[in-house]
Image 1 (cartoon, rainbow, N blue to C red):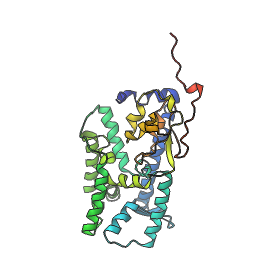
Image 2: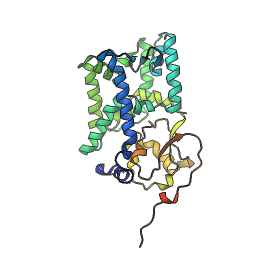
Image 3: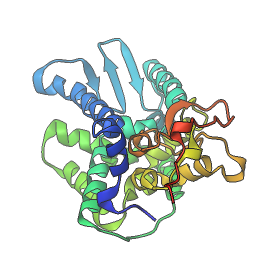
Image 4: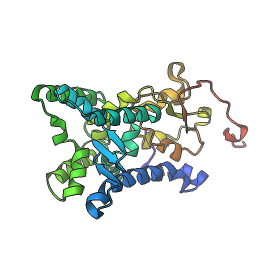
Length: 300
């Protein structure tokens, strides 16, 4: 059961202060908006720091970055990527192997801004319920996009990919691209919270496969200090990843190892007991909590 909307994060704000209770959220927004601006200052102002888009970019005419999902579609479509594309893919794969594949979703993807806005507004309006879709649906859609690419010989997914469409809308102005982005927003607002990003998006599904064994993880060194406020579940875009590490399900260690954790850091922000921290996947030994972190029972 989620905490009431007006109480989510209230304990953390009281314990740590408002800014500390939103630290990782602010850093994510700086990252997402900053990356967008790096792409946009070229066509807008002629400052070509980064050329291209999130599918393929060239930074300072030196650093190539290629979306491995795009390259996978090219390969099954029978296309031959250039050498620079392979170099860009290698850099991206190594990076997300280290920091977690779905960090792309929370720290880079501009559609996450749209999704989070819809989720915030949904909470503010008190909208509940909605459609139910399995989280495995995104992997079926991922497979279908590759099949379509193989059958048609085209990278068909990129014609409707909301990430690409959002970039086109920012580059070229009002058009069909904005209709796709609006559709994602309305779907997540009225039909299902985190419906696109959490259940349907094949991009997130692909990056979860890349980061399945990633080194950077959310750790819970003081999970015994948890007071069951449920705020971490309320803000997490993939709340199903928390329970095994938090409750030691089937002997699970104090680290979130699920591939679909986005490493967004919101659980760290909203926890008044500092149960969550960024760390590595190594070391499952449970650390003892300090006396000050233990809950003190009120006097009779």
